[in-house]
Image 1 (cartoon, one colour):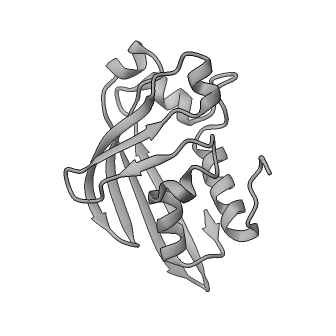
Image 2 (cartoon, helix red, strand yellow):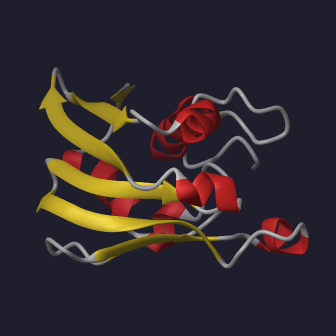
Image 3 (spheres, helix red, strand yellow):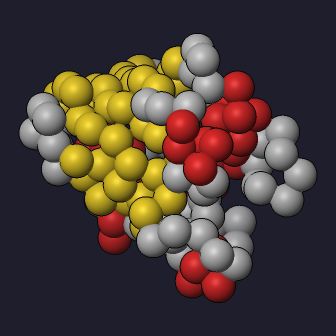
Length: 149
């Protein structure tokens, strides 16, 4: 995904709850950006009202190279079956080229078919997955607005 922004702005949009709560599903993501640090996504109010747990996604930071690369584990906790699939690996790569940023998101989902369907946007009523989230991040950084605004 190409984004007309600086690498630092993209990094902040991914890692700062003040930014990441604004796009996608409106859920703040909290990072302790040290290797071994925690990562968690908190349910928004609508999710909580529909029975979602307080922490809908969790993981661990494996590598942090601001504002260039973030490698983490990722586990969805929307249901016991999803949680049982275990942790997957998620890599964010931010590269400045041609006056813009190329954001590459790689989510390794071997052995996690339900999580794979979720992040692909293939589960009816569960949103549009990574494509939706990253597109909304781009829209926010380039226009100051999100799909919901």
